Image 1 (spheres, rainbow, N blue to C red):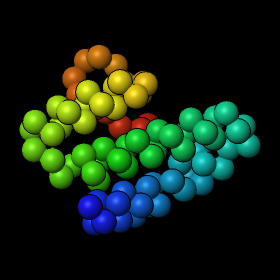
Image 2: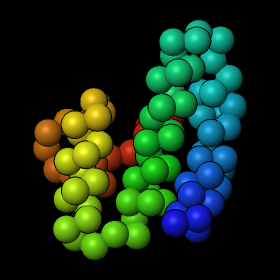
Image 3: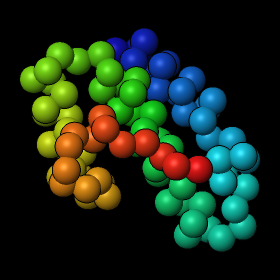
Image 4: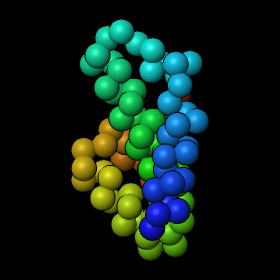
Length: 82
């Protein structure tokens, strides 16, 4: 469990830089960008270590949490476009 959290933190730290629009002065925009990078990091750290059934469960859970993923494909098919 701790390794998954460590991976999440390392991935987020490497992606959440000022060049990925985290230097925005608009707080609403900044909050949205932080959330997008965090969810992306969550998917590819914690979510990358599960089997096919686990991926389905994570996909359903994140969609129910109010993510802004299109209905086509799974959450694993999308990325943050800086």
